[in-house]
Image 1 (cartoon, rainbow over the protein chains, first blue to last red):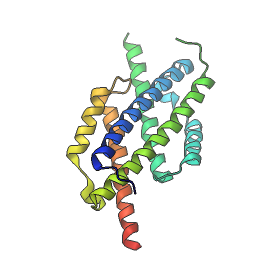
Image 2: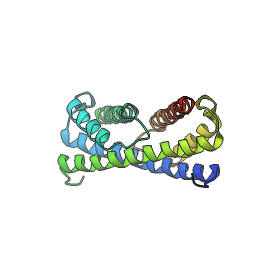
Image 3: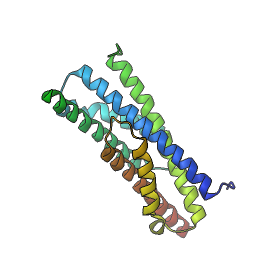
Image 4: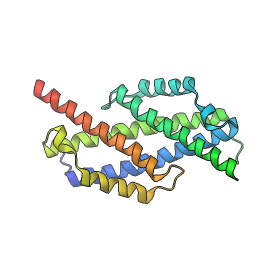
Length: 96
Length: 96
């Protein structure tokens, strides 16, 4: 065990949180860009085969400490949020 | 709009997924390290004030496209997974 204090660990966690925020939003922009190219509305953009492929890839690379079931759960929430974002985008487009 | 194809956007998304995986597990290790220092079992490690502070900081830095409510939802799932991990660690310690 190293000698890092709780304060310095929390500082490191704050930085990890902000990196996660940045990457989650970067992923959301990619979802939007892919959605625009596919030209379909939210509900049709759900691609279970592609989701399964991404989850398999993540599980293959998962070295913990989170278990595969936890990683799967968190990423499914991120995937779902991406789909919801596309539905909002589509609704906004209809209102323009 | 740029000329990136769906394939190249998906490739970029695969890379973002792996970075997210890495940062989520890095965060989990920090949770474990902080938990060890606090020396409490999982259920006592829930710190709603600290969670609120982290969420406020994330919302302050959120430039979208995800809304604050979505960011809050995703991070609450990540926080919850961290607490569950500590409970498992604690159970394992009891069994040693």
